[in-house]
Image 1 (cartoon, helix red, strand yellow):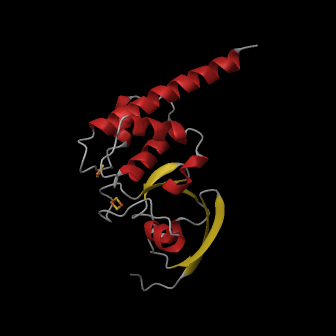
Image 2: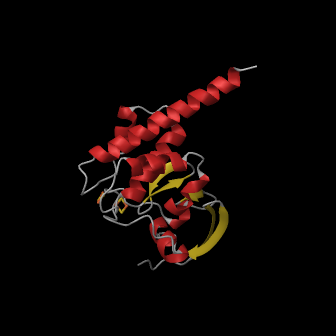
Length: 172
Ligand code: FES
Ligand code: FES
């Protein structure tokens, strides 16, 4: 709990302009869960080790438990509930689902957001890129193989979709 004085904070949340009054050191994960009832991202460790709280901030994956209220002024935040704003979200979700990527599902939102940030940055992501992007996310159930299969399936589809789009750009 914070004893700091609240400050007004305005930011974009899942495509909608939002404002809250919060102590500067309030965690983004708490703002999402307590302030907006957005509970898809989880708080596991609370110290930046597990990735369960991963959300997008200005297109990059961040740990919601390490981002403080004062840092989100003017930022664009996307939580797992807003994932469909991202054009390829369905491809990613379908790919993970088809490979039965998750078991209990606790880690799923964090992995999904981390992969979203990766594919936003690099639509041609390779297996080493995927491994690097997921190094901050922990899963206690799967042994990671199914998650990697799902991620690679998504990467394959996104590469194919990009190739078709690039081809279209070169057609008369
Ligand atoms: S709860 Fe944020 S990294 Fe674990
Ligand atoms: S599926 Fe249970 S923690 Fe990952």
